[in-house]
Amino acid sequence: MKPQILIVDDEKNTREGLAATLEEQYEISTASNADEAFRLMDVENFDVIITDLRMAGQSGLSVIDKALALPQKPVCIMMTAYGNVETAVEAMRRGAYDFLTKPLNIEKLEIVIQRALKSRATEKENHAMRVRLDNKFSFQGLIGKSDALISCVDKAKRVAASKATVLLLGETGTGKELFAQLIHQNSPRAKGPFVPVHCAAIATTLLESEIFGHEKGAFTGANERRIGRFESANGGTLFLDEIGEIDLATQVKLLRFLETHTIERLGSQKQIQLDVRLVCATNRDLATMVAEGKFREDLYYRLSVVALILPPLRERAADIPVLIEHYIRKFAAENALKAPKITKSAIDILKKYFWPGNIRELRNLCENLVVMHPGAEVGEFDLDPRFLRKRSEPMMPLPAHSGVDSEGKPLSERELRKVIKKDRETQFEKIKQVRKRALSKKENEKRLIREALIQARGNRSAAAEYLGISRRTLHRKILQDPSITEGYRAKRGRRSDADKY
Image (cartoon, rainbow, N blue to C red; front, side, top):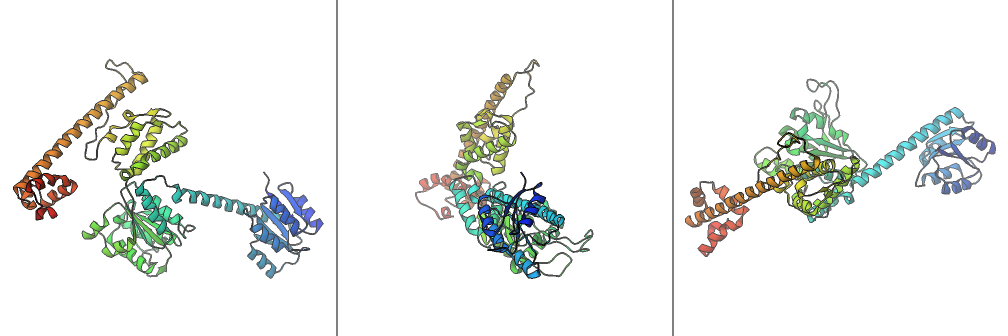
């Protein structure tokens, strides 16, 4: 479709002359005054409006005001025979794209129109991208209904509107970077940049320069000035992932920024004032690192103004069916394949799985099912045996099949599926036996601890010595399974001082 242009001028010759000149390349409409232009703008969406300044009735400035108040704003070009600096300044202040004086230079006008259309196209693309970004990183777009997720989302919503530094804690694969983007996109800084830095992926010797930048000659190989990630994030949000990996020297500089909101590039003593919000994330226990002297205590408290603990997937069992359905549809569409159907028995097994890789592991599973079982029904025997084992159980890989029988004859697809199914059933039986042995071992351990406590009359240090383990190990085992002490308490008839700890 041709771009639509509205020409507004009370001089008939000028109006019709411009229309005749431009009609080969553009769809032209004309208006002899502002009121007529208003009526046309109410029924048509124009890409460009070229308006005279001085006309009978309302001036061209009112046409600009009306045009720029529309939902789809056209580009406005002002023209007049009374060009002067004051008029040009006022037209540009109202939002005009450019200002031309009569008599018009047609070649210059065509150049201005082409630039204006490119500008409008870029603006529309930016707006569309902004809308897609807002939709992608809106809290309403999060998938899940579990209490653990809802609680975390509520906290993130409250902190997003503030200026507070945020520390995101959680296991690998729980979506810490996604939450960082959600916080940024729903904050007053949404129009500013979001700059992520994966600290573990950058060598320690280069991390300080990467974050704070450096001057030319600051160190060997620094051949030019480099702007760091902090300066790139000015007016927006800097996300430092794996914050526990930074060295103590960088920690000092980071603490100084949090206290003064200034940085210094390497090789410079000039203070650079910045407006950057800091969001950090880690899967490490920073409190333990502080106790071990690997992380500064003062920095830890400055970073954890608001600490959000993202729940692992095993604590979001109610979300697993919804997430599987979402990713199955997503990967089926991406690969132009028919989505497989996951049976209830398979879903029940996946809901009980420990998910050490969290969301990332679930995504990989869904992509595998889409590629390997397009349009098929996926039951429990189609799942990898690892999904039946508990965290403490060993992984039993499924043996590979050559696709031939014992005599070397190729197996049909149906026969091969039967062989694989039989092998999976065998693997499941092995896992059950492992579980049974592990359960027997656990019960035997509980019995031995009870007997040791009875023998030591409640003294845990003595009981640990009888068992040949440390008191700390004994205490941990009792905390993990409080039922260990039930038999001892029943025989003692009262609670000893040792049991209080």
